Image 1 (tube, rainbow, N blue to C red):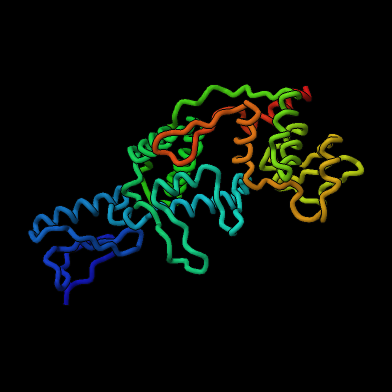
Image 2: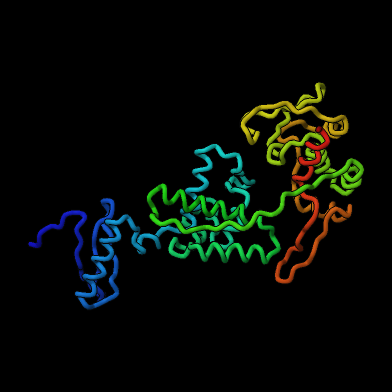
Length: 325
């Protein structure tokens, strides 16, 4: 009877029906079995020694890296956002969770979410062995070619870098690929004068006028505005109360409302659920800005949707702050 090997030691085995030698060893108490892709035993021994040496140095074997998919990195990122209470985590209408900038990574790395009720369906994306510095560089180039700004691309790159850092912290990978950021765009100085806003609002659909008006006059962030529920509104006192878990800095605050917004909110019935409708806000914003000559849409070859440049929604917050000053 062959002597039982202690964990941490390795050996070579033959598997019935396969001509290659297989290297077998342990890593963190788990048995690892890897094909050496050779019939020559001495060559197989060299491969075994290299794999065991990598294990001793804390380097994850490639066979293990191939088992880690983009979907695993993505799932750990979302869980980390939940653990940290990060307010950038958004819940979609179908109950799925996402982060701004994550969708473009999903598309590039081949991830498709499982269908509801079918946890094993979907595409889980590239293996860890193909998520490299060069891959990240290719992602950035592709996004820039689509006409996106450096800052927008950097937002996605930061998410990718965070995924890899979490995998390293969880001891799933030992070497973290370098993710290089693009040069930041010049700081925006977008400001919308009152007369320009009065022109713009005439091109905004009626269901979106309240939220656009709120953002312009009150300087609240779009993400905060989306969360406001009717019990937080006191139209008689002309106030909206933002709770701690709704604000970026976790400080509750009271926001005074202008008369023009109160007149928009009073007729709304029933006063239940979310106060502000933001359906198709960005698409309608682009159309309205073009109509008001505050933005342009340019067709880009190979890209289905035209590229928008001009006033952005966040410029409403900048305008509010400047007006208040």
